[in-house]
Image (cartoon, rainbow, N blue to C red; front, side):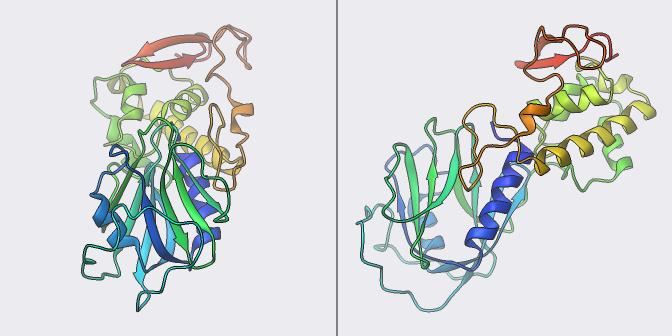
Length: 292
């Protein structure tokens, strides 16, 4: 599943490509799973709106929308299915309308020319005034599309939270620190890969109870989370499975993984074989020598 660095990379790429463009028409596929909001509501909210910005919140991609005046006549070209389109009235226009995309496990957002082959598992096509299309593709259909106003992701933003606030999230919690890091109600966006990598750099075993960690332990963990996430964003995220950014390019942070996915391989610090255990159903990788 794309985590914070991957979602941030995609959001930045989309912001540079589509900010200022206008959504002229919307096609939505027949599969109901990706639609968290009703199909007609998504189409009515998006059509004839200008994309004023694209940003990440937690693991969500948020498209900020603004009204752009009278509705334009549709462009000629490939016919889009009318599912969830113009037969229903548009809602009252609002400067705070937002399109919210959660990529799930295999979701992708791609900007492409209208004559590009329509991939299997395409669930949404937004035709843009620039004669391009923004497409949402998701083979496993765990991604979600919705519209909102004033959307807020659960949990604190890991790259913005101050040290003391970060530390206070984990004091007194009896759950393993790995589980606490993955709790999206505490921190929004940290996932399995970056929890493992952060705990390794902080020299903390993933199974340790959060409540057992000292102030010094938690300070190290705070610095490690910041460091790992920033490095991963700079390298475009981790392409473990089929993740690509908005331009179809893979990330490179997987080349710097120190424990994740390295079960049985020697620790890069001490040469002890990396171990893998399961915590709350999630595979967790650590060095039994370096992490205590």
